[in-house]
Amino acid sequence: MTRTVHPIASRDNPLLKELRKLAQSNSAYRKTGRFWVEGDHLCSAALQRGLRPSIAVFAQSFWAQHGATWEHAAPKNVVVPDALFSEISGLESPSQMGFVLDLPPTTAIAPALATVVLDRVQDAGNVGSILRSAAAFGFKQIIALQETAALWSPKVLRAGMGAHFGLLLHEGRLEAELDALKMPLVVTSSHVGQLIQEVRLPVPCAWVMGHEGQGVRPSLLERAQVQVRIGQPGGEESLNVAAAAAICLHASAVGTP
Image 1 (tube, rainbow, N blue to C red):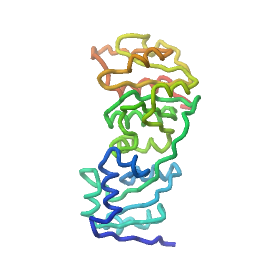
Image 2: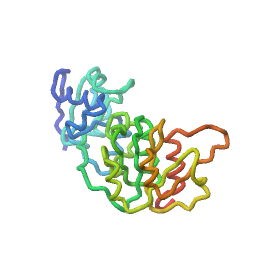
Image 3: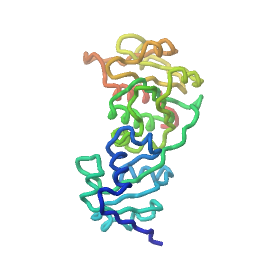
Image 4: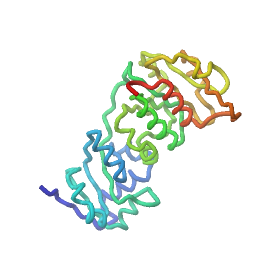
C-alpha cells in the first residue's frame, strides 16, 4: 500500500523550521529529542540497523524518480520543492532526501563492554572518524566526557558514516562516571609508555582519546592502568587523534577478524 505523501511548499512551515535547525545546528537535537540524517547512505545505514524514522523528507525531483524505493521507510513522507530542501540541508551539495529519527534513550554505562572514552575531543570530523574506527574494530560503547563535540550533531553524524547506529553512545559524562567500567583504561602518549606493538593489550579495555592539542587530561593519565606510545620513525611530533585512535583500536580489535 502506498503511503500518504504530505507536500509542503512554505518555508515558514513549522516542520521545515525545525529541520533547518536540526540540519544546521550542533545542539538542536538536545532540545527536540530527535536528529536529522541526510543522504541515501546514512538513511540506508539507519534502516539496516533496524532504526525506524518518524519522518522521511524528499526533494520533489528525487521523489519523482525514487519515491517508490523509499515510500515505506517511514510512516510519514514529506515532499518539498528542491529549493526548499536546499535551504534545509547543511551540505553544499544537498542529497535531496533525509530522515528524522528519535534519539535513543539514555542508558547506564555498560561495565564490561569494550569502550572508547573521548576526553574533550572537539573536532567533529575527528569524533566521527573515531566512531567509525570503534565500530569497525568491535568497540561498541563510546563515553564522551564533557567538552567533547556533540555526538549527534550533523557534522559528527556525517563523519561517522552510519557508525552511530551500531554503538552505545553516552555524551556529556563526568570523569567520575568512568568508575562504572570494570576494565583497564589504556591511554596513549607521544613521549611515555611502551611501544604499542610491544605491549600485551588487555581485552576488553577502554581506550582514552584526548584533546587535539592538550592530549589526555592528567587525572585520566593517573587512572590509566596501561600507557602506550605509537612509534613515529618519520620524526613527526604527534599524530592526529583520529589516526591514533584507528591504530590503537586495530591493535586491540575485539571479536572475529
